[in-house]
Image 1 (cartoon, rainbow, N blue to C red):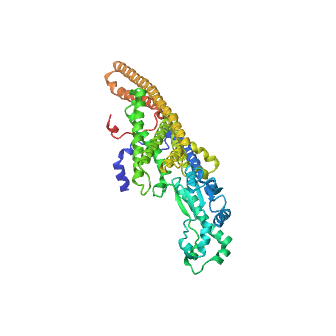
Image 2: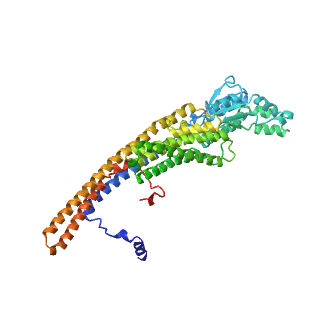
Image 3: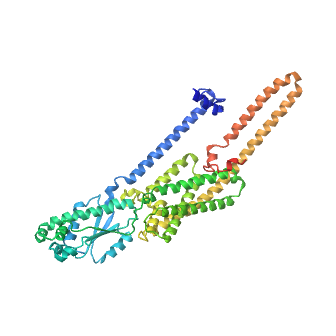
Amino acid sequence: MAQVKTLRNIYGRGHENRISPKDTAIKGPNIIAIKAIIKGLILVQLTFFLLFCYIFGTLYVSNSHVHNLSVVFVDYDQGLVGQSVWTAYNQLKGDDFPTLDLRSASEHPTPESIRRSVCKTDFWAGFYVSAGASERLATALGGGEAALRYDPADVMAYVWNEARWPTTVESYLASNLVKLSTAAQGAYHSINGTSAIRALNMSSPQAVAALYNPWQVQSINIQTTNQGPRTVYNTIVVVLIIIKQFFFLLLINGVCSTFKLYLRLKPHHLVFRRLLGSSISTFLGSLLLTGAIWAFRANWAVNGNQFVLTWMTYWLYEEINFFFIDAATAWVPAPFMPSVLVTWVIMNVSSTLQPLELGAGFFRWMYALPAHEMYETLVDIWSGGCNPQLYRALPILFSWWIVFTPLAMLGVLRRCHFAAIDFDKEEAAFQQRFQEAKDFERKRDRQRGAEGAAEKEPIDQEDDVELANILRKQETEMRSLYTSESRSRYGPGIVAPGAERIT
């Protein structure tokens, strides 16, 4: 009890002039409030349920779509080793294994041509068996100088680009290609085990080692991307950029509302200030984000040119999100704005979680989302041009910017328009209240002249009560002018630091 009393002493006025929930005066507002809460509850729960289903759907049985990741396979050996690889692939082939696309050496005469195909994203990876690998292995089994010179690393290799969704390509490409190499050893022993043992020089340790460990597949990584923060480039970073623009927009709307700028300044002045503020914010924000990525890049091989290009890409993406949210807050009714914002966040981050080839065909529409094209552009920058998707990415990104920048600016004009309308309503309500107060005072003055001095005091008290009721009624009407529709015209806002001290 002492604790409750102490709390009441701290916030004592919170208990003054309160009525019971059962009071008839609050029965109507209570019912309205409960209905509003139920509607809001349904909207929020339904929105998040659908978004949960959507994001889970994008990742649903993604391992069964691994076959959509194509790998070019070139057998320069044309011997038992290449045959063993193909036999092993036929054993492993399935929905959960990358598809090997067998090509001739005439199409890809050198391993460098395979690298170029992977770099151009014609394939997700490349796998090849070196020329003469089978002959070198057979010679090494006989021992002697050939066994000493035999290099198991010079048999087969795979080419890949780790910068493209690093965690995905590691688990679905690199690990499976290593698995293919291991399975190929078993296939080789099954195909040529008897002959190999007959030819084996048991007195040569190198020959025995060549039989039991005939090769070690080599990784040719176009852009090594193994630093820890890589896991957030296509996830948390995408979300935080959107949230940052939303909070900055809250600040701008709060300043405009606090100082009534929508009513005082001309729309083109507000548009210019908004463009200037958004440009400075996104310019600095993208610079700081890029700086943070570079500060924690560890041994990631990126240079100054890539820093600038990364900065510009993030700048464009931040601009798109700012103007999208600005336009949404101007045109979308306030009760639906949270659903729009969280849907925008989830849709964008879903498009960058993994390659769209690993999802159902329905989700290919996410190629049109700015976050996906932003990440595709970044991969191209980080891997030195080995993700040439700019022909698609840049038009999509600039299309978003071109569409929503004018909409956001038109939203400023809309806010100014309704600010003037609301001011006229407020002024008319004030004049009405002022006129009724004057009429009441004149009436009371006339009554005072007609009544005797003894009756003046009780009459004054009755008149004061009547005047208070009139003012309360007018105040209620005044507040009714600011409906949820009216308040939503200016967008959500927060008070700017320091503005709360200005009257």
